[in-house]
Length: 117
Image (cartoon, rainbow, N blue to C red):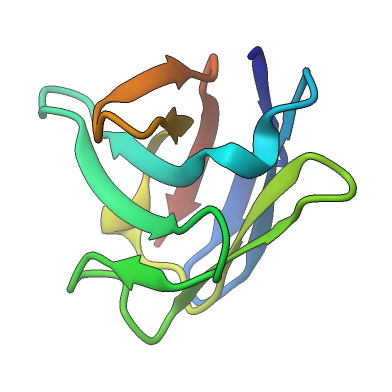
């Protein structure tokens, strides 16, 4: 599986962005999909996850109520809708595919999100 993230950019605080992550291969629907982010000088952190079959979602407390993860298995794509963006959301955002082992099997290349205050 190859993951291609897109949709990042520069946005003012309070604005919105939607990230997309397109996956290659026929097995996309067998993976839990997630988004992580890494700010300069910080470790990569979990942002959101959506399960493979029933679409149950999980969020980091810092983004709960502002970000929404969704997936379209027919399009092999996972999305992250981000609203009410804050300067502290500035980071490189990575999509990831987690297999049945519970470990991250694949990472996307990352897309930069910069929120100006």
